[in-house]
Length: 103
Length: 151
Image: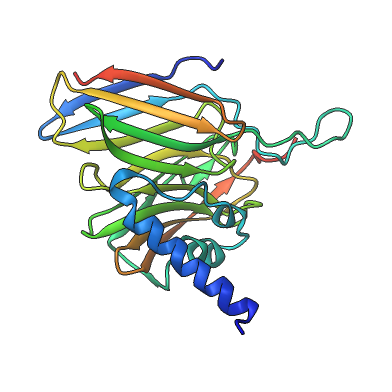
């Protein structure tokens, strides 16, 4: 299983800035290994985020997103104490959800 | 008798409707493979469902002028316009141009940042797909001294 994400959510005014660092190989499918064989693509395809259980963001990613991807977005109306949950799903069907509290 | 072209066109429209109608629940159709396979900025935006493209000052792309490491290039896309449906980040000279696609909802600001891989120096694009299907874009040149897509 994949390692946990690091999520930091900070409230400022009427919004909260959320920074997420995911742990994923993000293999592009372009690289070749020592034997000259193409390394198959392995990357996060879908990312969703929710505020107190209500979905606020969905994203689709291609293999061109960097290894151990970083994502920053701002949620309107989030206050300190609210829960932000982030889920990703990769092209092998692996998925992970982590949660953080807005501070 | 329906021609293949008509059938394709029809299914594209249906898929578009499904995607936009299902948006609040994020019940969008499965991974948009066509868009991520597209080789040019135009093809990618078309595959997402945009009709016309225009440059806009209200869309901004942020990124470095020179990226020393093409494997990790911080890129951001944002817009101040209301009525944005999706925000796209694209790198023109990557094997597949589309890097990331964000669905904008009322609850999030149309301002996203992530990190992308770049194979070589290229123009990077931020494209905002509006609710009416227009695509507004902005671009910026990023020079890469060490590519991030090869071995």
